[in-house]
Amino acid sequence: MTTQSAATRGRAVEPAGYPRRWLAAIVMIVGALMDMIDVTIVNVALPTIRRDLHASATQLEWVVSGYMLAFAAALIIAGNLGDLLGRKRLFLSGAALFGLASLAAGLSGTGAELIAARVIQGAAAAAMAPQVLATFRAIFSGAERGKAFGIYGATLGFASAIGLVLGGVLTEANLFGWSWRTVFFVNVPVAVAAVIASAQFVPETKDPGARRPNVPGAILLATSLVAIVYPLLEGRQLGWPAWVWLLMAAGIAGLVVLGLLEARKPGRAGAGTAPLLRTELFKIPAFAAGLGIQLVFFGAMQGFFLAFALWLQAGEHFSPLKAGLTAVAFSVGSFVGAPAAVPLAQRHGRRILAGGALLMVAGIAGVALAAPHIGVNGSPWPVVPGLVVAGAGLALLVVPLVNVVLAAVPVEVAGGASGLFGTAQQLGGALGVAVFGTVFFGYLNGHSFEAALVHTAPYAMGAFALCAILCLLLPRTAVSEEALVSEEALVSESEEALVSEEALVSEEALTES
Image (cartoon, rainbow, N blue to C red; front, side, top):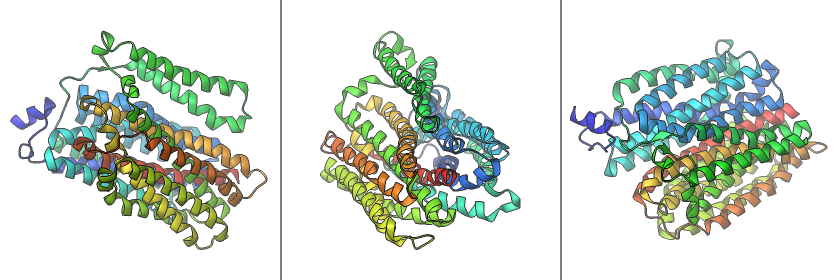
């Protein structure tokens, strides 16, 4: 009774106070796995979805990008609502909605219906994600908290690695004649179990100092993000008409206006509503640089692996399963590098992160140089070394990044900074798919898939090189324990994005071909 009320008031529960804290953690992790697996598992099914629903290339892009955009737009306000109304309540609502949206996705009869279901899935995932880490901070303390975050990060990283493989297996198995629909239906029993178990074992926690969410600001944020990404996704197909550029400019202007409005209300209005963009953080060079790294890194990663997956499946005629197994080499590199990333960053600081970005440059170069040696349905081994090196680079950069940046921001705004990082990750992925897709498909006209991949690689290498330069603006060392705890969980999200994008790639290539 005492423990429960303490958790409800938002204070960290002593490790011995809530006896079922580890069971609660397992339940929430399983629920969060739906998001991580779904992002990756869906992509390998996209070519089959295209054939079955007669979906256009643009619709297939929106199946992936719609999810990421909804996630990015809803993430911050979902965290605010959890602090105010109760994290358990938001997690349960998100899990239930995710299950319903998954059912709707599996029953979709048209591309438009599937896109709508995917958008709802993304918003539901955004409702769940911030509640997990916030609840862990409330029910764990000290070394146990770090252990819980570590298990969370490792589990989600594993989920992102197996997503492509599982998607290929389910699609090719054609269970009950459901074909691609199985990759959505599989979420339904998981969601039901997560809701029942969470209701029983997860304690309710709130932030007693939480402010009401800025709903008008959230609407402006979502509208602005869509206005930016929509023209990039649709522009190539439409021939880049003038309204596309005007819409994109309006989206950028919307973000500027939102930032200016929030910057002007830290006093009177800011006391009543929770900030979305936290413009004061952008005055901290380390935070601004870190957010830029997050945006550029995930944009380049998702964009390049889109081209990579398309090349494998449409150019080299790999099956979805074979392409997914090839991409696992990237995850292997990440798993190998992850354990050493934080200790190295604590010892050598930003140089390790810059080195990780340069390893990404080297890995992508290796993939591009090896691509001509694969052949139609040939052996994937020539590109494996490059993928492993790139994966190790991801671990050295992304795993310590949140730790390094949060060490430079005030403790009281660390949660808001983490929320902006998550938003930047999703937005960067959506932008990367649009920008790199334009480069890849633009060159594909009149050239082979292999030539288009090799043409796209230098753009990704340039983006990762920019990340290395931005790393020089980060603090020299990272010592924040609280940041260290949260970093591993956020890292896995990066791996998720990477695997998701790899699969998403296959969709467009096959569509365009």
